[in-house]
Length: 46
Image 1 (tube, rainbow, N blue to C red):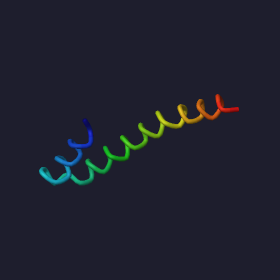
Image 2 (cartoon, rainbow, N blue to C red):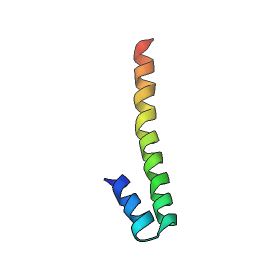
Image 3 (cartoon, rainbow, N blue to C red):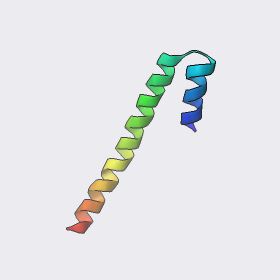
Image 4 (spheres, rainbow, N blue to C red):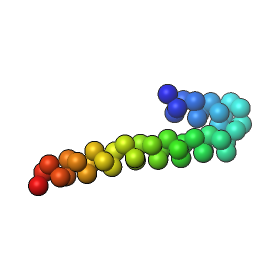
């Protein structure tokens, strides 16, 4: 999982910038996966 890896990078290895960048990429991936699902569910409700 990427979450625990981000935590280790940020605090164990003091690579806060890299951990932040990975967190942003992970957030974008989640949004890209969720938005089409929500759009499809909204279309089915009509």
